[in-house]
Image (tube, rainbow, N blue to C red; front, side):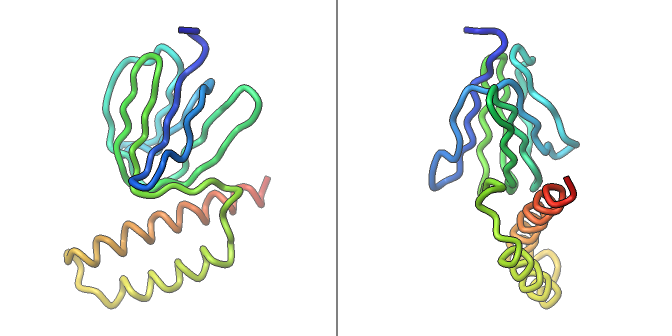
Length: 139
């Protein structure tokens, strides 16, 4: 294995979103963002809603992810998440509307109920999408 290349997979229940060789990956871990380079020590981490940054040899890819699990090995990183969306597939108007609708829905639910938790996770994902688009527009 080339020690400068890392195999990366991003998988949702529906499909493999991304599978490629990369230089590095930045992941929104539950205890903070972490970077993965080839040769990294093995570990598992929970993933929170946020931005995954994939540095490839030819391009950088930005994706929003919901919660999930990351498995890091010296030659590979695998992210298993509920949802993922690449920045180029994001629609700012749809995201803004979803945030508005989900915020209203969340406010109407008793905290701690199963539906409350589902809506809160969906809202966190949409807010991660919005953050990614905002950073793109500021660049």
